[in-house]
Amino acid sequence: MFTLSNKNAVITGAAGHLCSEMARGLASMGCSVAILDERLEQAEDVAKEITSKGGNAIALKLDARKKSDFKECQKAVTAQMGEVDILINGAGINAPTPFMEITEAEFDNIIAVQLKGTMFGCQVFGQKMLEQGRGSIINISSASAGPPLSKAFTYSVAKAGIKNLTQNLAREWATKGVRVNALRPGFFPTEWSQEHFITPDRAEAILRHTPMGRYGEPRELVGAVIWLASDAASFVTGAEIAVDGGFSAMTI
Image (cartoon, rainbow, N blue to C red; front, side):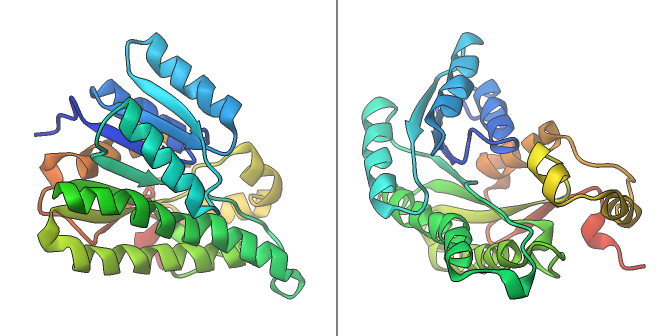
């Protein structure tokens, strides 16, 4: 039921802290993985790590702001791996800029990578899935998709858009064999977020609002990803699955 043997997955932003772990997790289940990222060298490192352990992975350069890049990657993946069964749209960037100081360029760039990049991935790879009559798309939402978190204005706007896009596509493609869901991670600190986002006071507030009282580990996202990607979730579409230690269940 949970097997992913002989399946092919594409992951955008897969050189990053969370999505690289998703790639390792899918590969461990027998899935071939395409590591797509603008940081090609880091993407190649992830692919090499997977192949060194007996898995199958390739690395391709992707600028998530460019639909043309998605089209080129789709052609390359199909040529090297075959039809794509699973797509994870994980490319993303953030900025802690206060609202009144956000420039148009910064706003457009975050929206382009996060929201447009997710749309492009769904359009390009989703089209092939519709032609196949099967596929699972997992979009990466966030605890900030709603209600929004402070210090992440544009990021929150983008993630709310991704949640809505996920639900819209799930409704449109439900009878066509393509499931579209979102994964909603809680707090999984990276070097960037610890430097720019999680101050000592903020860390205390986050952990106080998280019933489990701790941050998540990237490996703790893998189970939900495997479930959503597999036939075990065959009747699941339009869902936003929270992996957040209870953060989204808290009020006071």
